Image (cartoon, rainbow, N blue to C red; front, side):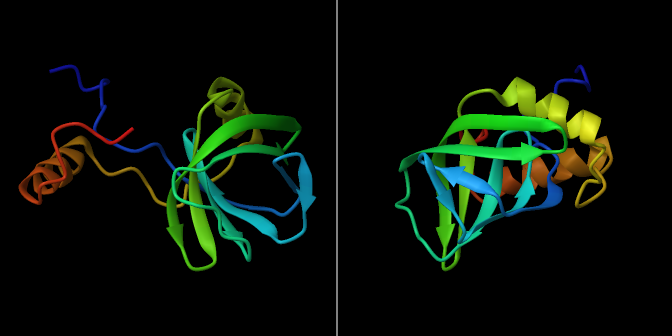
Length: 130
């Protein structure tokens, strides 16, 4: 098994405090991106979108201006999570060059596999949700 192919793990998350966000072409003062990964972000807000709703997001990370289409994949009172649908390669570069610290250290390969097998036992499926 090629240990470089780790499709079961989620991308690293990085703590940020981005409060200048353009959401659906509207500058929002009630939106704050709390953490970010190559695939999505956790957003704190007083406004609550619907699960599955499509959004457009624009924000700055370091020296990079980032614009993407996104989909709401998680929601909780005061927060929602989005999956980025476009321009993730630009965000990957921005994360790398901005030198953000990950929220947690990546576990060893054996620990990742143990967690994945545990997820299988709990019925979370063979493949990650997209």
